Amino acid sequence: MVTAIARSLAEEHAESAQPVLDWAEALRACVDSHLRDLQTPPAAERLATLAERAQTLVAGMDFTFLFDPARKLFSIGYRVSDGTLDRGATTCWPRRRG
Image (cartoon, rainbow, N blue to C red; front, side):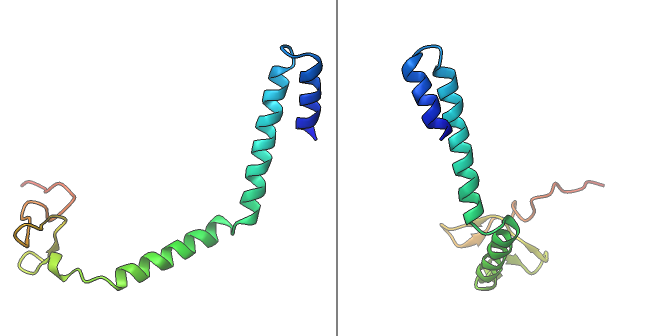
C-alpha cells in the first residue's frame, strides 16, 4: 500500500518524489524480512537444533589419530602427506615460558 502510494506520487512528481519511493521500497523490504523471520523458528530453537547436529557430528567422528598420548594433547596439525601429527601444532594457545 505504501509503495503503491509512493509510486503514484513519483508518477506525478518524478524527480522530487524519488526519495519517498526509495524509502517506501526500503520499508517494504524491511517488513518482508520481518515476515520471513516470523515464519522461521525462533533463534533459540534454531541454535539448539544446530547444537544437536554438531554434537551428533562430533560423536560420530574418530579423533584418536589427532591425539598424542605421550603429551596428552590433541594436535591441531596433521600432515596428510606422511600421515603424522605436526609436532609444532599441538595447542592453539601460546606456551608459557618459565
